[in-house]
Amino acid sequence: MATIKAHNIPKETSQVPWDKLPLHKRIHWVHTILLTATPLIALYGFLTTPIVSKTMVWAVVYYFMTGIGITGGYHRLWSHKSYSATLPLQIVYAFVGAGAVQGSIKWWSRGHRAHHRHTDTDKDPYSAQKGLIYSHIGWLIMKPEPGKIGHADTSDLNKDPVVMTQHKYYAYLALFAGFIFPTLVAGFGWGDWRGGYFFAAVARLVFLHHSTFCVNSLAHYLGEQNFDDKHSPRDHIITALVTFGEGYHNFHHEFPQDYRNAIKFYQYDPTKWFIRTCALVGLTYDLKCFPKNEITKGQVQMAEKKIANIKKTLDWGTPLSDLPRYSFEEYQRKVKDEGHSWIVVNGVIHDVEEFIEDHPGGQALIKSGIGKDATEAFNGGVYDHSNGAKNLITTMRVGVIESTKEQ
Figure 1 (cartoon, rainbow, N blue to C red):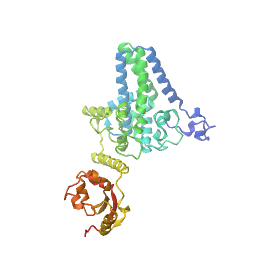
Figure 2: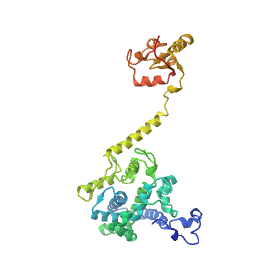
Figure 3: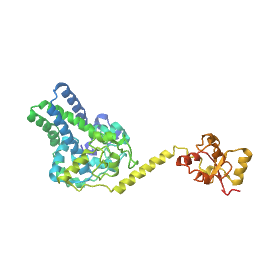
Figure 4: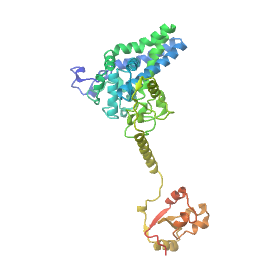
């Protein structure tokens, strides 16, 4: 399922613009048949086959095994090199990863590296900017336009014997690990051949496909951007629950070489827990974690952005630079001659007319400051006003004193 090259297009259509080709020539029929036939087969199985508890347990177990094969193996081990694994674990990953029927390690990793390098652009193989359906499944049904998928270096994978062996025999491995093996386990194990095929093989595969597809779709639409908002990836517990912990996607895109997606102990990330558990018995090692100081920087910067956006919605009073300027004498004259209920606090004139009756300290105290410089009284001379009071008074600004010297 590699990127289409020009020589794969019939000669009579190779010069035709891609978007002008007939629809049937742009559809990836192998993917389309697989992704439409398996749900139908699974539905037929549920309608015609008795459910055996052992088979359902096995289906769930193999669902998690093949899911971790993608998230722990294809994704965090081979695509991002976020940790190292022993040869036996690599072989297991290659087998159960093939059982997920999502392409070979090499093909999957090449596309995923392009996704990270070209996120949200036309060179992103499953760009969220093309819509939720496209990023979830449309990119698999429609062939990519030749030359459009961004470059990604896979030279390291080309030298990996496990990767290249799996890539060479992927079609056979996918057929066996995806369909035959789970059927054999249920059949030889407790005689449930039909259940093994319909539930542990096909239905499991349908749920697994759409679970991991959510990393490309839902994880770019649902949740918060806690570390960076330059691109679409987001963090959300719901996405994490359906993707084996891959739902903390904003963190992952910001720190892709970190073996974790979830950095808090209570966040759901079974892939991280599996990798860490394997490290305890020597199956994984060199687990990479991005420096905590840099992670915290990202969180602080995003928190500051959110606060700044909230501040824009609040009334902070007329900016001082936009207020008229008065000498102290002019301020006193306006209060005396025009009857304004103005007071000066910290060099700023405030109109307290509408607040006199609501003043918590009583009307007499606030009236005693009218026409005067009440800075000292406001800041502790009479009462050290709270932050709430200081914020409130900013909405009453009407002028600025050029000189606070009182005559």
